[in-house]
Length: 345
Image (cartoon, one colour):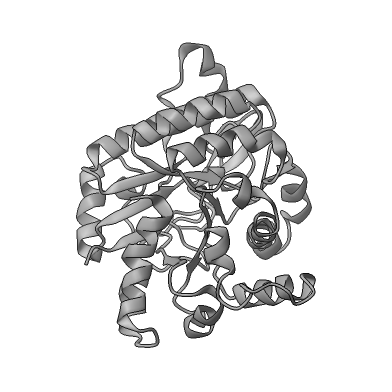
């Protein structure tokens, strides 16, 4: 049975920005090395990116159980060999630096997204179909975002990367409808990853716990999408919620049941299916309990390959099969059938 890692990462390098046009070079991120960097191996990295006049951590949250040339894609063949060791057939690749807001300037966002997408397209071409990816969009310029969607679909993308808010708007904003219409037609899901979505929230929560900064926003976005008209307006569009665990699904089902005056018929195990929503579990979730509410067809799993945080588990796919808590048939669905359905593979 093929195994699909539904949440793996690339770590951006200087090569990521080599695909910028001549007119975009002013927006190209630069590497800044402090005079007194922390020692090697220190979490948080020893370098920074200078992006739009601000310093952003480079090589932060790095999983040192993965080779540098593999996680930064300097050697795509090395990444494939490591996947073979992990018995993974396909990885769906998400970005790293873009898990936080980098700019509010449309021209900078567009330049960064275009270069990243072309870098990923080049990686996909070398990956022999085993490295699929979530594309970045310039949400401030929706017409350009639609163009990027078409390029990405033609070059191996299988999803749209989104944060819980884009361009200072929630994901149900009518301004984004042209994006969703194109995604609906191109069979590309919108996948909301653990992230910090706006400058305001990033500054507000930046010195506190990572939970409100990166986790609660995507869960709130789930509620926004599930209670909106988006599933009816775009009847083929799928949604993913990635790297925020899944223990909250029963809570959401109860919430929607009670806010519907106990009229909802899908509240126990049909909410995700009815709204075409998929959620990535982690091995320490109470998966048998979650299955009572999520059903068997809308859960996936990933490793967070390349990172080192509370969601990172390089052996997650093996561990899930070994712990014996979930029926093998259901595990097969999470690792293969459900992932294929979410990403249109």
